[in-house]
Image (cartoon, rainbow, N blue to C red; front, side, top):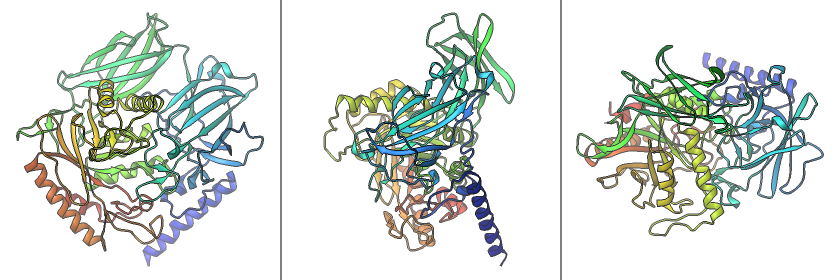
Length: 599
């Protein structure tokens, strides 16, 4: 009786909160098959209020998330004369949390508009308009003047809008986004216009935070933070904006351990600055220690810009372990990696989690179940996601979102146009640049199961040149070309290991997929799993057997890592450890942990 009473109270509070925010803002989520419990916590006046760039923090900024005017037009139409209503940014237009839940096609575009005022103490500053992500082609106007165009669905980008302001106090930002989804060849992961099976609902338009930031006329544009565990050093490169305009600039780097300064150095801008980290505390999943950084830009002994950041002392490599197998080494030692395939979809926000707490929930749940790693599957998350994996101690294999086309078996690599090849290379470069500083990210996965796979050796070489500090998994699945640091196979449902190699580590990049739909928590009545289980007891029994086999493959066959499919159910897939709404942990965290570790 008590449980029923408590449930009634929670539901009543959620209803009351929903009525209150609807009355104040006129916004409410669109009707949806299922929602997560965090939907009721979304504040339409300030959704996603957290600072979006945790590795280069300034104190002054303005969040533009919230209710914007919107209209959906033909792709080539001009700015709409009338707006259709309000959309909640940063949730994609297809999502329930946007308040719109419209179906988009490649013949349509979505327009957004809002206004803002510049604080008086920003008047002498340069004003940057930043988009954490907008899918796919984004055109921006300020007060009717075009500010810029960006093509890419996953990378953050910024525009200096200072010179575009009109004389009026309130300024207008207008945004047009066109997304061809699966009707063109840009990277788009598992987004399709007709979802089904392993392909899911698309996310068009703005889907991460939009924000303003005041900066100095000459400012810090970017940081490159590289740990060197073997030499107990940290290397930091500070890049300026505008680049190279003043050769007299210096960068001052201060490293702190629990508020105590342990290293400090001054060096030239745009060049690597070395800092000795004595008795370095190494970052690892069981102790994800992070050093605090303060970075100052100095001109004529004056500080003209300052940001805060952090770093983890972590090394990832492939080498000979003590048992003679070539393995993935963390800080020069073999650590078995057990992870899940993590797709990052949500029933209420599609690509965008309802809140940061919702996003964090998945990560904490994985840790509680005993996993130390995840494979972020053909999607790139907000930068705050990787801040959480850094803080919580979760190793990340980061996939490059896949593009159009498919090969298998002995088929040759796809032939792509110069334009398509260049766009893929650009988006791959942006992925590596914008997640380079995160110690939790240890591997770049370039292609998955032959999806969009082209010029495998060349793209692998590009990735390895962009980042010499991480492992490159050229092809996860069954289109291996012998390149990269990893030999990766997929096998459903039971675990297997590829043949041990001399130069590359072997991993099981996907397996499992044991399906169990939970009544009342599915996207549709029609659903599927790679192998359907009749109940949670059978699911746990089969899962336990699988990991008993895994332990033998690690010990006797040289297997370094395994990826179980998957963290959560996704739309019609019911292979998750958690239901799609994150309401049910199908086997229980403690049972999963015991199955993973055999005790």
